[in-house]
Image (cartoon, rainbow over all chains, first blue to last red):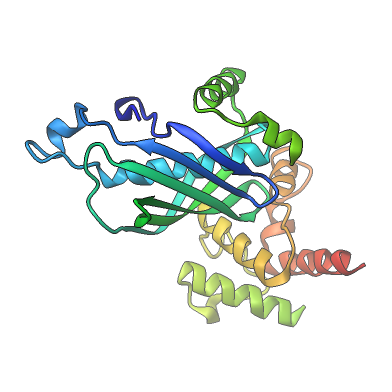
Length: 157
Length: 93
């Protein structure tokens, strides 16, 4: 994770386009300027960034299901639960599944666990639309390469 | 159509916290009931689930934006219900 840059996913571990599921891993950094304010002397991973990490995970699933033709934009968070504190250095296991493939929108459910203990979960809604700019798609493809997006899964699916 | 309307009206009432008795077949979801596009996603999700269909929201939006259709054709509830009935019938055909 480079949380200052909103890079909240380290690696895609599994992607199943036929089952509509994805699993990623991310390690909360031991040091970050974010922790200087959250909180001074008592660093904690901000809950909003945990939610963002779930949104990014679910977002990659939606991108996979649209085969990089469309971009998901965060539209709603429902029933978000932050169950425990997350400290620097924690290994996060983030999963998401698609609940509904709507016309121009997607409903997903995402969860985070650490050491098999649930940390947070939420239902996340996206608006799904064509990439507004080609440059955005290119940037997403570059990010996909960085986090090990399994292009073969698209061919297999 | 009446049962479709009842289902849709109940969904709108629950999703948007709108009094059920103010929701009429002639109500325009946006102009009369004040439902915005984000709330309509929730309604579409519930309708898709309830009827086992996929409302073609993207196509409808495109047609309205292109001037090929009016919002009344899709978002006046009796018209919406007619389209839902058509999608359900097409699914079973």
